Amino acid sequence: MMRICLVVIAAMFTVAQASAQEQSPESIPEGVVNAHPVVSVERVDFETLRARRIDVVDSQGVIRLTLAGELPNPVVDGVEWSRSTPVSGLIVRDDQGNERGGFGFASGPNAVVLALDHNNGEAAGFNTLPDGSANLMLIARPAPTRSAALGDRLIPGGGPTPVQVSVTPEGAPILVLNDTHDRPRIRIQVSAEGYGMIEFLDADGRVIEQVAPERDRDQRRGRR
Image (cartoon, one colour):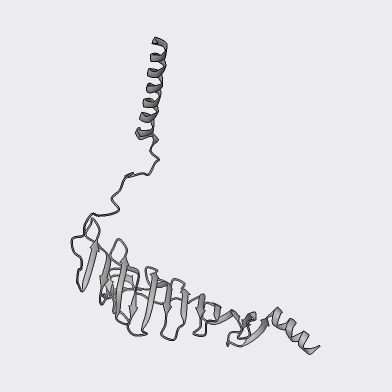
């Protein structure tokens, strides 16, 4: 009986020791802040909240997010600039309060837009237009230009768009690669007949070579 009791006690000690090791701080992976963070609430404070604008600030009081029925003008390098068209939606800001992207509806082109910004201009843009097209643009950072009158702060600008991806209103996909002067030089698309093709263009926009193997094969067979 004594031997059985000792075995049971040893087993209980082993289990307790293993449990203690699992709960010890050393066993928690590095980087864990809270193993049980709050991710839900039991009730809401308001069923409906109506506001023209909501600003979310960080611990330093800097506005980092703005949600508004009409977004404020963009701030670039600490200077407020006029917005090209009224936009409703959400903008994100860096730790200095400068606009660095957003999502919303642009009233001018009647477009839904998503944008990511360099510190002095747009970097990537996605939009859907009333004609049914959808467009993605990857934009090079414009050369930094500064204003002495503004204390040597940056002036926003637009850089070239090396990559454009579109779906036409008819549903045709097109990929265009532009040079540094925004001139189309390579165009990859699907023709109206359903053939995949690559076109090479000169500086004046003329197609100087077209590669479409399947189309060329079918044309040869048709001549036979």
